[in-house]
Image 1 (cartoon, rainbow, N blue to C red):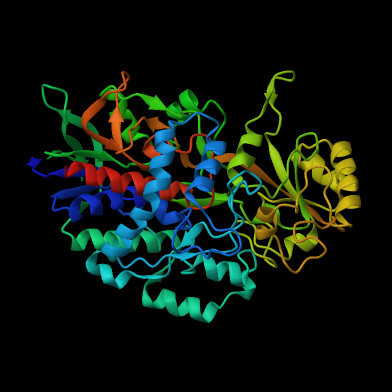
Image 2 (cartoon, rainbow, N blue to C red):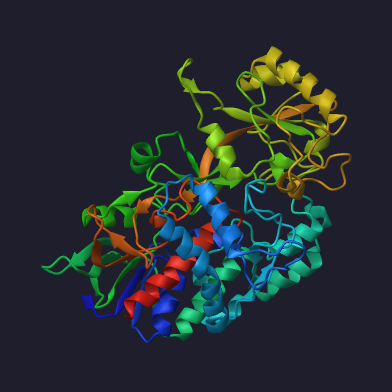
Length: 537
């Protein structure tokens, strides 16, 4: 069975939906294929943020943002490993992309004035405002398609700005009456809200959106131009022709162990994305001779694996962005020693977990544990466990630090000495070793009710607890190299005619860096927008 289209987009996260909307807005006949039975991909389980430097949504304040500052910052993060034309394209196109979405959809962006860039000390960084948030979306607007919208890991319809105001790690302070009313009304927030709004706009533009459609092979003409894609739709192999081209937006390869082992080169065993991200787009791109880039990189992060916690039939690994920043806990390796600022951004935290000790021939900080006291346990939710509920078996506990160390396999003497050293400084609200609680990013994530430092407090009396943290990722960020329009390049640097890529399936324009919250979605949306526009030329 063959279907005729102008454009076929593979994947329904923010990148794919933006690409589909971009192409459809120019009058192209567009089909969007989604492998899973629901739309949204990794975007739907994300915070739904968009990192947008120098945007009109930014409250300018005392130090206005600028193109030059944005370029300086992203270049510093990229470490010279990204074509500068891609960095310039992102910085110059993020705002036109937002303008397009504002015109074509019901999305309402607002700046988060308090959310800092992830490396606020670098030249060109800002201490707040570049991260944009979305509001609440009414799934009833999707009609019969409402049940095809991917649900997030949490069903709580909250915005990021509300979470900041109420305290993301203190749900006892949330307005649960309001949230219950939203649930009953079919409202969703964060990533699901962004996906719902984009999907709604695509459907209104006539995009044919198909679920349970796994793309497996690109179709090419005798001259090598990509003219369509074969997909397995509900078990049937079908050909979707694309007279203008195909856009890959199918996510990363973090759930494909073979690809992870071959390319990432570190024990990344805790992907936090939907398990459909198995590298389908990457495999198809390689099969037609695409050049690859950034293949050893991911959007790293330390994850918790709560036994029995699952999503789409696979283990659910939960990020720890807020949890590990809170006072009353430390993170130690098997020697019982701290090895970083626990409150640092999750991407660079993951790089610390991947550090290899060539002398001992082992990963120096794997395994590692979040160790905390009883006050911490009764103050904050930890993955699926809330204060006052029974302690699960995956959360080790013991009356003394020495017994806790024995249970976890941590050096007891090392842990005891570390806690004594840490407590002596934390009592004064300082961390002279790793400077936890000094940066504006650390402070953004702390508990404002704890003084003199919202990120630091001595570990007090037992019982004590330990939860193992795993090296994971929100998604991989390597794949086919693209040009400034999102066109996929071959190993000689020439375009592969008719093939484009955006989002986590493509080589990231940020290289090894992670500018700030929402950078993942922002890059995907920018190059999705550009790819869709390019198809109409």
